[in-house]
Amino acid sequence: MDAKVEEKEMMAIFFKRSRDNGLKITPQRSAIYKELIKAKDHPSADIIYKRIIKKIPNISFDTVNRTLLTFSAIGITNIVEGYGQPKRYDPDMHAHHHFRCIQCNSIIDFHNKDYDNIAVSEDIKKQFTVINKKVVLEGFCNKCRKR
Ligand SMILES: [Zn+2]
Ligand SMILES: [Zn+2]
Image (cartoon, rainbow, N blue to C red):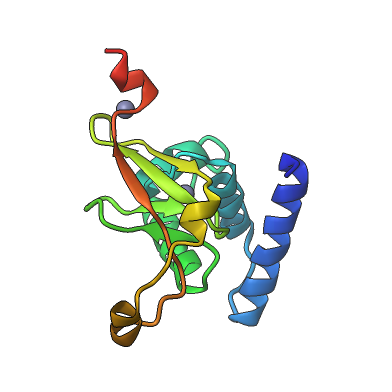
């Protein structure tokens, strides 16, 4: 998808979800969300804070942190699970999978139709209601492999 179109679409979802959840759309919140959807690296709150402070010098880390948690609570961003602290955020709510580099800890998106359609066995269905499937592959990214 065209990056500009995608950004427009995501901002529309942001406005709608915020309204639906009674969350006031402040310039700070909009700026944090914009920064997040630009990021393809699954940033932590700290990294978003370092980027946003260049645009909004008086914003506090606490505001950024709380806002990101609120975004995940209203379902416009995901928290990337399973990598301990700090939490990493993922604004891409479409089906996609992750490759994690065990050396530099980067989390890289990839798409694979077979993984999207991965079968959930009956005994798992008995235990859980599955609403999202994400495959995580781990190893060395291109940069780390060459070292
Ligand atoms: Zn790496
Ligand atoms: Zn992702």
